Length: 196
Ligand code: GDP
Image (cartoon, rainbow, N blue to C red; front, side, top):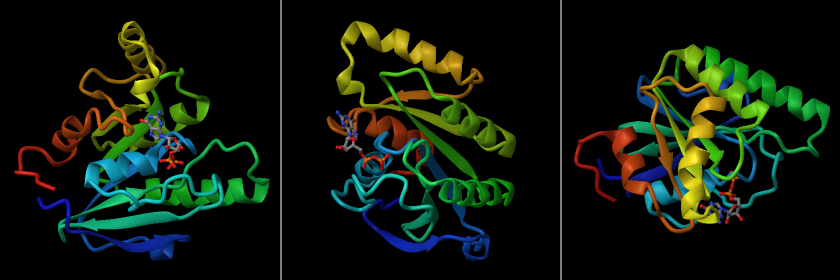
C-alpha cells in the first residue's frame, strides 16, 4: 500500500455524513493532546496532515483520510478536555455513539499516554471498541518521556487498567522520535508491502 497517496475526504459532524462506501475504516481514538494527530502524521510520513495542536475540544468532527484509494484512517474527535461545554460534550457523545454503533469500524487504534494510567474515558473508549468486535491496537505514545526502567511497568499497567485481551497488542510509541512506526504499520496494514 502506498501511504503517500493519502488525502482528506470529509469531516463528518452528523451520522448522515458517515462514509458508507464499503472500504475498511481504521478508527483512531485518544484523549485531547495525547498526540493522536502526531501519530497519524508519523504513520503517513507527513508533517502537517492531521492538524497537530489544534484547539483542544473544539472539533467534534470525525475526519476521514483515504489511503491509497483502499481504506480510511478515521480521526475521531479527542475527548477529556476539561474546558468543553456540556452541550459540546453531549454532541461529542451522540456522534461517537452513532459511529460506534454504525458497524462501519473495521479496526481500532486506541492511543494512550505511556506515562500515565489510562483515564476513565480511555477505558470507556476501549469498551466501545471491544463492543464492536473489531481488532484493536493500543498505542502508548510519548514513550520518550519515560526512563528505560519505567517502560515495562507502564505497559503492564496500561494492559491491566484497560483490561486488554491477550491478543491485543500495545505498541510503545514516540511520535516525537518516530519509535514504533513500523510496528504500527504492520499491525494495521499487515504484510501487504507498505511503503511511504
Ligand atoms: P492530539 O490533540 O491528540 O491530536 O495531539 P497532538 O498531536 O496535537 O499533540 C499534542 C502535543 O503533544 C503537541 O505539543 C505534540 O508536539 C506533543 N506530542 C505528540 N506526540 C509526542 C511524543 O511522542 N512525545 C512528546 N514528547 N510529545 C509529543
